Image (cartoon, rainbow, N blue to C red; front, side, top):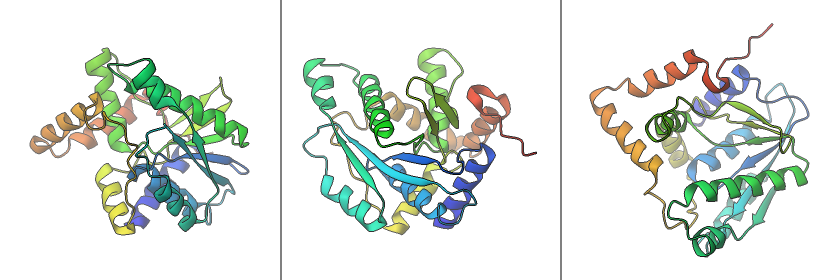
Length: 241
């Protein structure tokens, strides 16, 4: 199962020219199954890809008391990777100071800001997030339903404000494959401790897709194919000379 994931990650890296020689990549690790698997995959691939690159795992701690740092350190030590944990008080700002009714947007923005700041301080020129194929599709539907626009995130995005290129190497990997692989590898999700987990707009869209997929088993493939063919948000593949 890991070989299947490695194959799809490698294809995404190749199709969108995500990694170049000499890159130092900050891998965003929240502790969930997706980010753990991305770290494992990139750690494996850097040993035999034709380009040479370094990785460092970066975790932004939001300040929730129940966040299990010990399990996170156990993961990092088992993989023998460099890591950095950025401690923040984001949870306090979002829930106690701002008292946000819909906290996800502010929390996400603050978390990304802390992550990019740490990445730059550590000398990284690229960042990798573990968004997979299901995330791509869900983001498209969320934009359509809640914002009235056709949009999803790009495989590669240059962030000029922080001078970092963001890559998403797991865009060809389905969530069910991620689940199966992490189970095979014995990777246990480390929960953030956030009180609104499982009640977000993304969760509602995920349930919608699940229900529609019972009637049309090609639903995800059709939606993902439409995104690729449309060329929206930088989805045009890099053409090899």
